[in-house]
Length: 441
Image 1 (tube, helix red, strand yellow):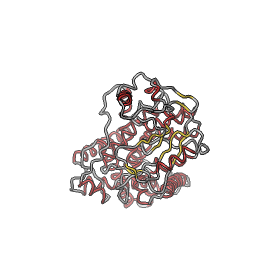
Image 2 (cartoon, rainbow, N blue to C red):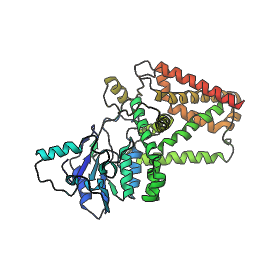
Image 3 (cartoon, helix red, strand yellow):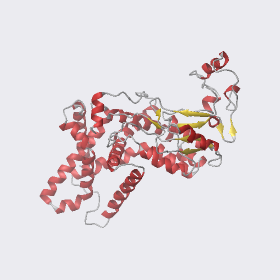
Image 4 (cartoon, rainbow, N blue to C red):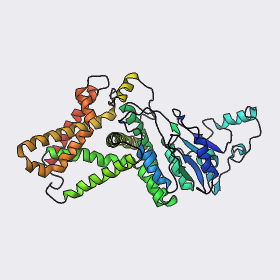
């Protein structure tokens, strides 16, 4: 609106927490030796009001800190929609490909001479701020933010990288900006589902990082954005591991080597190695073991629920089937919800469809684990040797799903799992088991 050379973007629920933040950003912009084509300086998203265990994994350390630091070693981090200072020139084409706007006064090099209160300036401001200004204009296709997806922030950062712009990750000890977090499970899952739909839109667009990104931004940066854009496909392997070994265990079908077989060490080493690295990365960025446990549990929940629904919604949109559309994450603080959150207790409350796959997986894992305990008591070492890996997977599922057992069985407060959801999930669990037995026969 003012043609200032630097633009700050912030979410509406975030506030400045560090008065030196603009100075830090300007130091990067004014030093051309840091990165010759610096387009923006990204500060990580940080939040206030997190409970001790961060039960909903709201820190998003991998997204906003760990992976971002890795990308900063190449062309720079992605844009995450808030806490970011842009060079205005960035929105007018690539570093060597300047796009002249249709209105000369919108050029980043134009000097505003009139008062901001003048009729001429206000009339122009109203024109460019209108909803239809981007229609069939250069600003709507070649300049400005990149639209066509719910996650226009990630898409914009990715496209700017492809155009040749660099970015910088700045993470001062005192957070630059702080924002709010969802304090109920349904709000958290809804937010993640919305992100999942947007990531699918980026992944399967004509500018897919898998093809266009690796060609224009280079293999490493293309791979980074591919890893981010294709997050929703995690629903496939996680759903398989959350159900298939357990169903086979219920039917006495071994899938993995015996505990006495040397090949079982391959599975053990892969599991321990992956989780050890993940835990090390998390704790090395000032995380705690308790919050890491919550983070990995939420990652499994997202893959089982949010990404599954996101994939279904994306496909239905591509087929022209109406969906429920864009939903904002609720940041309204309810006193009872706030009390549950501070005590580290999951808030279910509403009968959300997003709970159903999670509760279903919890029931199947519990059934498989209890069956295994019974068989071990009868057959002892023989059964344990045969099904050790599957018993471990079922037990690990039970451990991660403990808040759901509390919500379905033990709790009586308003935040418990709705009876309708429990009954539907139980019915689906029986149907899955029956269908599995049918195919076996």
